[in-house]
Length: 347
Ligand SMILES: NC(=O)c1ccc[n+]([C@@H]2O[C@H](COP(=O)([O-])OP(=O)(O)OC[C@H]3O[C@@H](n4cnc5c(N)ncnc54)[C@H](O)[C@@H]3O)[C@@H](O)[C@H]2O)c1
Ligand SMILES: [Zn+2]
Image 1: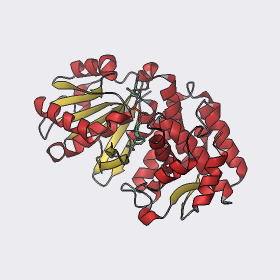
Image 2: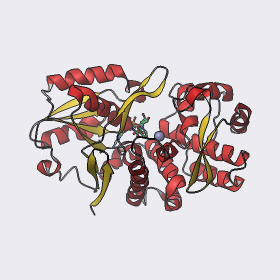
Image 3: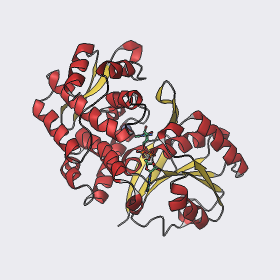
Image 4: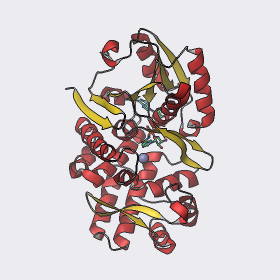
């Protein structure tokens, strides 16, 4: 049942292993985890999996951060540095990020910068982290001014995906993971869109296909100088919605609405058939993800988008769709077109 996907990067290559039961049966030496290490997780996952993992390793400390996007901050990173010193981590030690995207991004950033960088192993535990955030080497934290404004590229030494930990993942978080899986489907793999409605039944195949789609993109463009930007499909809208909602919307929920908005904007600009936007909305809505910006002000969303780090010199920049598998970057979309799309999604 074990799957292995190798990712080649400018700094060498690393494996992504996908195997139900991998954590239970973990062989520390086989994964380079028999030296000094810290399992960095959060207060929810420490009692579920973190303690057991640290105990199963010959020389590992357990470090916990609070749970929630609001803790993906430099303050938390500072705390982690202190805990890493206290745990005796040196330059040859490994940081093991065990958690969802928040732990992966925050602990990953700490690993990228502590002593100018220690080894990083990603063990994603949310579906979103498995299909997206643990792969590709982007780590970072939020600032009060916006999401992911401080970060680094830090390739993991390996990514260990054990889908069996998803048994404890709340349903709302499953759906969030599916938003990113649908994004990968729209960008590169239509089979993902066919599997999405029955996602619990097809989770192993969804993880494998979504990871492969992301790997294909990041291998082609590791530092986001070109096509990697396609992975931001729906995200210009999403990051703004997260912020305007005061993070009451989860990242995946905002991505879901962002995918619908991107498809609607594509149709409005004549890039794709409106039927594609209907299809995206039906898929997203069908699995219980939001398709409306209900209660959020389109003008406020636009204002938040205008601070997006991808909008260079104030020029708007969207990833849009000409069809499934045909993303296209479009700049200088008129504000009135964007607002018109958001207005129609506001009920
Ligand atoms: N670095 C990247 O390339 C990248 C890509 C996509 C998203 N992200 C980031 O990822 C973050 C979102 O990640 P997320 O959706 O995983 O959120 P998250 O890390 O907040 O996890 C969601 C919730 O599920 C809980 N959880 C995780 N695994 C669990 C399990 N197996 N059992 C029970 N509970 C579990 C967590 O404790 C948390 O409460 C955002 O900050 C986003 O910006 C980063
Ligand atoms: Zn995302």
